[in-house]
Amino acid sequence: MTAPPLRVGNASGFYGDRFDALREMLTGGELDVLTGDYLAELTMLILGRDRLKDPGAGYARTFLRQLEESLGLARERGVRIVTNAGGLNPAGLADAVRALAERLGIPVRVAHVEGDDLGARHPGSLTAHAYLGGFGIAACLRAGADVVVTGRVTDAALVTGPAAAHFGWGPADHDRLAGPSSPGTSWSAVRRPPAATTPSSTRAAATSAGPASRSPNCAPTAAA
Image 1 (tube, rainbow, N blue to C red):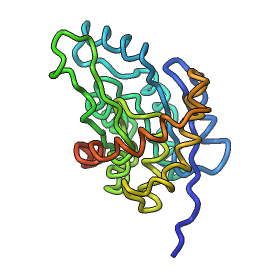
Image 2 (cartoon, rainbow, N blue to C red):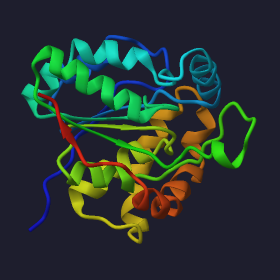
Image 3 (cartoon, rainbow, N blue to C red):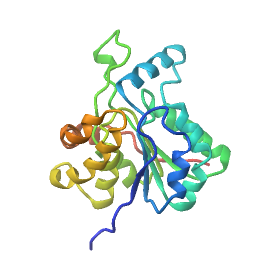
Image 4 (cartoon, one colour):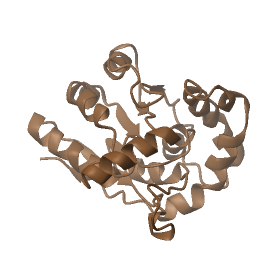
């Protein structure tokens, strides 16, 4: 049986993008998944400095404020949210989302993907992170997560992960993964135009999927 189409929208191209976009995407048409890209190299530096001041920081706080006014709407419409707003601290953001959901009385299952932090291999560096592919995200969605938070993943992974979960693709399905890589890469072109015309993110999504699929923490925890 052929799987139905997967409708994916994106609400952010960088940390500091238009605040109202998340709600507008949820009210602007039918969606299955809503993604948000908050990370760039400069952003990782900013988050690293935040973490120096507060070890519990290191994620995009804007996303939490956006989610406060939109989580109920996403739940009502059955839209799953996938974002790399976790930055340097995806577990911390996932916990913050759970606390927010509990405070709002919205039952959601939240998961996070980790394994990108290479700081232990590079002592003394402010940040050191690998780009993960989309299969950690796919594992979280297959496990039933409503909200998936990641750290550093390829731009395309925010789309290839949900697509792999929806269509049952594996790491070797390179031709299939190349399709959803295009919109994922194009959305990131808001901050990095050459990415829209090069295949680098497509290759990264395919070749980095193995490590990502082995190391996610994605047992969704339901908020009370």
